[in-house]
Amino acid sequence: MDKLNLKKENELKRKNKSLTHNEWMTFFFLPFLTPKPNHRNDDFSQSELDRFKKYGFDKKIKEASKAKKQGLLFWLVMILITISIITFWKK
Picture 1 (cartoon, rainbow, N blue to C red):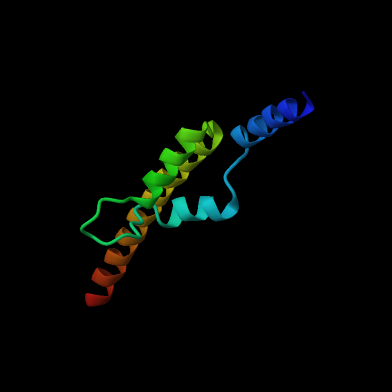
Picture 2 (picture 1 turned 30 degrees about the vertical axis):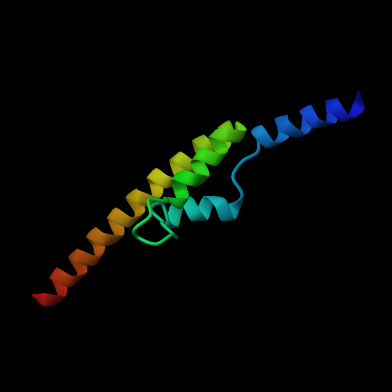
């Protein structure tokens, strides 16, 4: 009986656990990372989200989606800043 309660308690802890720092950094800085060859359709970020859904990690799903959106915005801003700097220096 104690093992069953411990198992359920551990499942609840995992379900409500936040992303680790490394997981968050991966979703933020590499929101479009595809570590597999180009001919295969494997998106690392999406496969991680699918894994979170499979095991019911609701909090991680929300945080990962938010980090991914922030990461895409970050790269968009970085590209715009780079273009602005290049055009400024060419004048």
